[in-house]
Length: 588
Image (cartoon, rainbow, N blue to C red; front, side, top):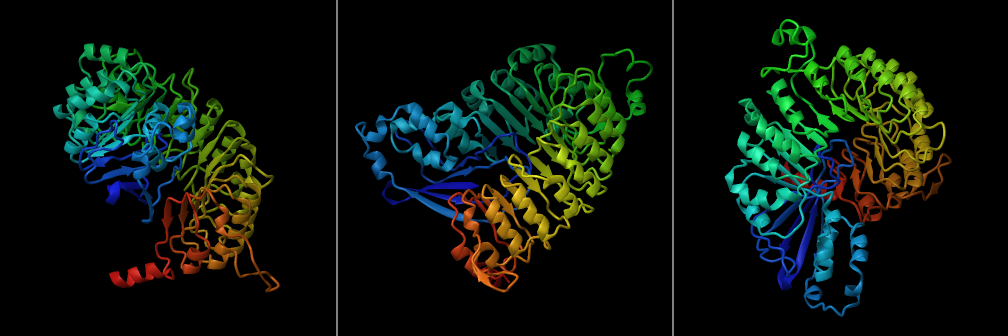
């Protein structure tokens, strides 16, 4: 969400929260602040000085893994600064120990922490406690001139930075000197940066834990990055805390470049090569390593191709791997699974079209420590793979098999064996019906299940009612395009049992009416009118998607919409909502 802060009369600060589109990837931060400052902001004894135009803060919650298009929603919080400026050290709330204040701030969202930091000096100092900022990051893109002026003079705590499509040159020297020593994660996406500059930056980052160098074609094009052995040695001694490395979408990544990155990250645990051009064909590899070079352990790495054979030499200690959107096949996956001393916890194989059941069977045989497995869009994987997963991967917490079309109720029924599962994506598994879902997920009440995606499945009303009864602790539920199953009665079951929901998606569920959302005027089978359960029961709801629910009117908004924590609301194509109808008439 975007938070816009601007000066108003009498030194009041107005905060506008506007929902926006969530990105499909993140650097595992709970919140990311995208700060684009049009004027100077200096944090000193006065809490916000020089705030002349506007501050844009983009705050993203990535605990949800799905990609969504969110509609605009605005709520306004007005915070008067008069009481803040008039406060004294004798005020009772100032007497609280700073540890208590920090503990209170840990429960507040970013926007509220910003407001609380303006109460007094003590609260301002408490708001700068480093643990409060461990899940926040700054995203910088476009022209960096003004933002750099702000950050270079700021006393704030910033541990995570994302640079997108910017030129990182000498003008950032003061910035790097200021923030690199405390920086914990750095993302350089599609940036113009030289080989020498990235070395100078990384040498200052002694506390860096995450490094993302994605889509940096210009940086890798010459093949000279980290070519100096002295630089590699210095960086390996500096980046001792580096645990995660992302090299996604670098099509010109070669064995030589890959080996250099591995050399500077000796303690790496998490490696992502999503969308990289990797050669999995052993015969093709022999063209670049002729003769017996591969068998003899020849150390001169190719500067022309990135081979899977070379990658396997560097993954013995890795717990998390991502080969999404690559050409990995059954043979390569079998090789990966059989690597000695490899104990995978997370494996991302999203959109790997070459994979079949054979490779997954081998994976489940050798890598039974897996807790997260993403096989979505692997459209050849079927029931044999899912059955093997359910019987062998007993520690699995997250499973994504969306758009695995061959999967049927036979495989889904075996999900009951995954006792620790808390996150499941079954979207667009066309051959899965309510019968399989009920056997696999609803055989007993499950109080630990949290996230469920059933979008575009041919379900029925009865199945959703059983899900609501047996999975009462869900925090995320996607029922998009389940038009036959999502009715007023099934929605009522959700409101009755699943009161922990934080995100509810009913996209294109056209049978839902005001009666279902409000619980008013419901008719039973005997045609008797009775009151049911309102959506207001979902007090912690943060995201609601009603896109295309054409039978929703102003009645629902008037009587059923009262959410203190709602951040994203999608009412697109809800034509009977008056302001949407008027907007549509105005546009067309």
